[in-house]
Picture (cartoon, rainbow, N blue to C red):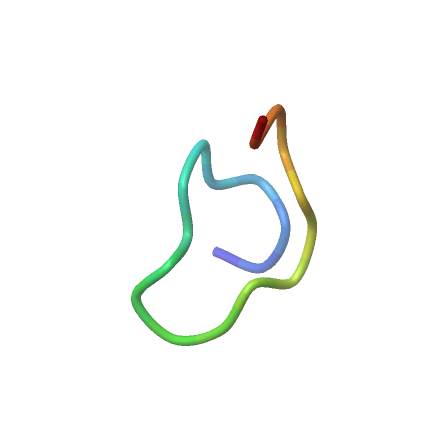
Length: 20
């Protein structure tokens, strides 16, 4: 669970995955 989550806003935003 590093940069493969669809919406990882639990810990820290690692990569903006379709976050518009």
